[in-house]
Amino acid sequence: MGDCEGRPYDLMPIEHYFARWLPAVEDEMRAIVAAPDLHAFAGLYGMIYYHLGWADTGFNSASVPAGKRIRPMLCLLACEGAGGDPEAVLPAAAALELLHNFSLIHDDIEDGSDLRRGRPTLWKVWGVPKAINAGDTLYTLAHSAFHRLGARGVPIDRQVEAHLRFCQTCARLTHGQHLDLDFESRNRVTVDEYIAMIEGKTAALLAGSVAIGAIIAGSIHDSRYAEFGLKLGLAFQIQDDLLGIWGDPAVTGKSAASDIASRKKSLPVLYGLANSGELRELYAAPEIDVEKAVELLELAGAKEYAAQIANDYTQHAMAALDAAAPQGEAGEALRELVQSLLRRQA
Image (cartoon, one colour):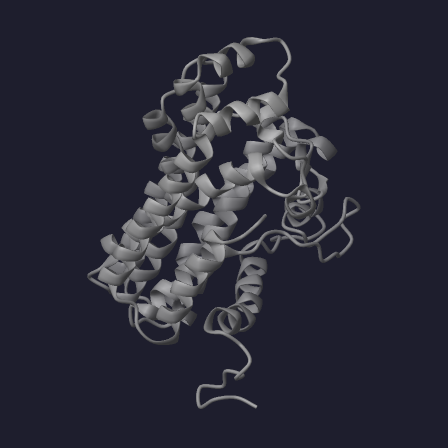
């Protein structure tokens, strides 16, 4: 049973949207990442398939959860909400997800991460040089996706503008990672510096996703969509910071306060270090007493501070979305997506 637009009555707009468009995004990603010669390129493309959850380490077909595909969904929703055809924006939506995964491959190498989505990371299985090469290939394929927009009827001026925004997003993304790496070797990082870092590392790609969707739709409000995505990304990352310290291990899948044990410079930690001499002394010790650190963070008001900042960014995001005025079911779904992302527990 469904309504006049084919949406089952028991599905909310965002659930319906994901059910409808995720298969199309996956198909587009597979088309972009198809090897030109399966035999000759099997190893390289097999590694990419592994990272994307489509293959195992032997390059046999597999179906492994590989992320929620939030970025392409934001792109599709913004395009339709701005009056465009989501079918037309599919290549760009897929490109955004491929770019995100390129960044994860390189982040895992730079951070020395052994696991990604419950499986050994690419560099852990095949070594750093090959993993870098696979990441570079995925980056290139993501850019190549924009030539597919013409076949879907997107005017050339919108193609050029969307690809330029994509390139700008790439630059901001890698600059954010540069700042993150720089912070690892610094004893002092300010809250303002941290916000600048996550604007690039996390928020820029969400901003680019909605802006590109609006551009391809021909909307004059692409800057408002971009502002929405940027503020949403900041709120999203700060919520991650809170979950990294106070999240339920049964839900997050990692030990409580793991961010403290690894000395991650998240927003609550930076606020606590700026306001508690005792916490600074604790962090200067060879080993951190995690339980004591959490106690001192709470005494300094770090949890409440970070939660308030996340809430402020959420309100700014919703104000920008209201100004962009997305229409129809896509507009409903965008608002639902914001709520689901910012109320998540993992």
